[in-house]
Amino acid sequence: MRKLIIGIGGITNGGKSTLARSLHEHIVNSYIIAQDTFFKDDSLVAVDSRGFKQYDVLDALNMDKMMSEVQTWQKDPVSFLASHGQRTQSSRVSETPEDMYVLIIEGFLIYNYRPFNEIIDKKYFLHIPYDICKARRCSRTYNPPDPSGYFDGHVWPMYLKNRKEMEDTVSDLVFLDGIQTRDQLFSIVYEDIKMEMQRLTGND
Image 1: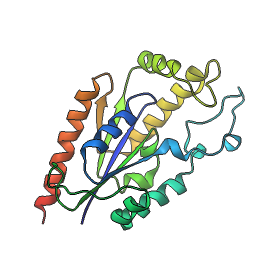
Image 2: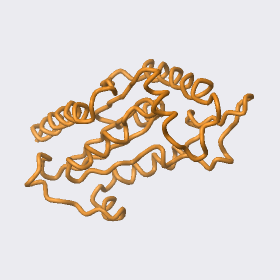
Image 3: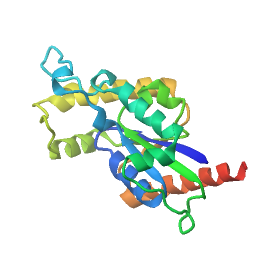
């Protein structure tokens, strides 16, 4: 059995989830673990002196629980898929090599959690400019909703801080321009992943 772990990280509203879903739809026996599903209860998230909830930090997330989920997949992808209501599929009619299982880890702080950097085989990071990011963020509805000034007072400054920390510790990132179309981004990443799968197959 061959296993491949892909990381789709990047800025808020940069297109991470869309790209991850597109890859999942095209890669047989793949599964997505999304960081956004591991936020702690709102009552447990710290608040700064301005009253801004500190969501854009690792402490706001149940990272141990997320890592446990990843490790469960690593131990037995077949059983993991079955326990999550997803049947394994034949790769004969796809571009996925036989006996290949792919985990897609998606999230805005996945590369700031060092244990992930040790296990993710292919690391991609989506970035978009400030003005586009702010426009996209402000057009979405969150629960709880963003308070006035939250983007400039917390989201963007923390993105810059987290990105610098990430760049100082992670050396094998592939940066992607999030203003490209969905199809363009998918094509770039999918072709790269196919090459990696072929490389892994050739190692037999």
